[in-house]
Length: 223
Image 1 (cartoon, one colour):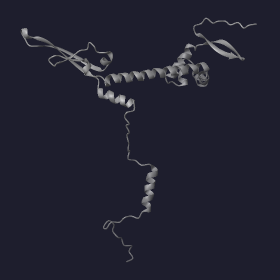
Image 2: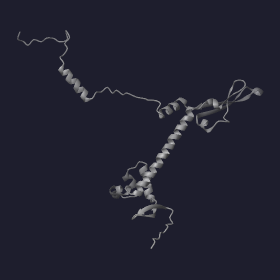
Image 3: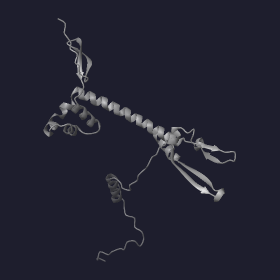
Image 4: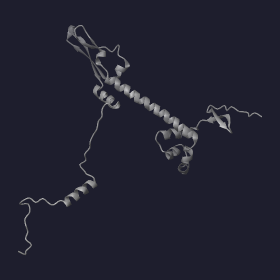
């Protein structure tokens, strides 16, 4: 009689091919319970096993005695591995994003937002600026004031643009890519015990050097 399979109608269930008694079967692998999902998340955030067990509601005695059993479950181990993989991928994306932001600052040329008039004057023009170029700008100040009096008065607009520190961004990028080989030698001025003992033995084995007038001869009283 053929074995009858029943499909579980739960969103938390998914197909998992396995082999049982040498025959392929299709079982249904349930996703972790919410408490175990929270346990996995806390563990991947850096908490130890006991802290995770307490946080999801286990009693202290159970947390101390059964943590190894809970974390030793195959589904929990798999969930931790998958979560750590996602975290590493997210960290890699963050590293790439930091590099891109530093590159925007390091290679920004202010000439891309400047126009030169027929009189040789410089005028800022942001109409064609890209988001990467805007990311390199740290501060924009607009001052509006009036010059002259009466009918000769004119409104003047002054724009000041201050990009982020270009050299600092270049140095950061260079260090990230290993272009700088900084080595710092720290001399604390203290020798090891072995070195001090060696120097002490050398001093004991040497005859004292007597300089004229440094020592006074003392009679023993017999002559």
